[in-house]
Length: 320
Image (cartoon, rainbow, N blue to C red; front, side, top):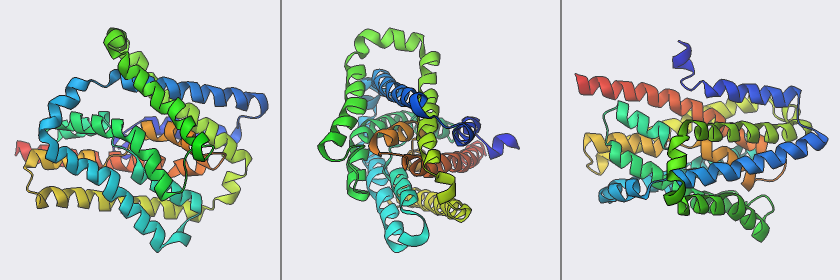
């Protein structure tokens, strides 16, 4: 029962980190140390993402260009359109920072690990899923900041040119450096892959602790009413339902076969928590980043639960 309710035990670590920041927020000199540690882990995260991305996998899957284009359009065009329509229709439904967080969810790229895992369980097109999810994460590094500039009027922590420079220094350059150095460090990365894997989650935990510490000291839980959290939960449910219905319908409408429709469904609806948290830490200034992170933290768990159910159902249908 617990595994069904919480498919990813990492959620418990996230909840624990939020509680730690609530009762023991980073202050003074310790907050400065946590802030610098957060920057260092973000740089390491994107460096290793670049080093792990195999060009061969992306190139091998480019033959299914029509499938990849469909997934990318859903991820970076249709998803943001749904978010902005919701925000424009009901701007007073939630506080502004929560709406920015929802728009941020809509602008994020797909995941690689979980999307490919669910496609595999459901007997979908796994090679295409690897190529599509990898391309989505690569493009997300460049596209997500631009989309947020359009959707929410933000261009990074400092705004304007300084904000773009911050994104370049902490995200673009480490990713590019890691990918360019891949021929020389590939053996090291593969040998210590399990240890490097902890970089992803440790980066998220440190960034969440830093962000929520600043938000708590600014009165986060006094400003954010329980009713707003309940509304956010409902908005996320509606957003996920629309995304699932949209990907399922588009796959059928465009005449894709069963394996490709499964790939569209799971790669088109997934949003990356691993990239989302550190990217938000770079893109958004000040304590409001703690509030902005709430939607992706909730959406992450909800998408895992829904996709786990659907993947098992597809697998059972295939076996039958």
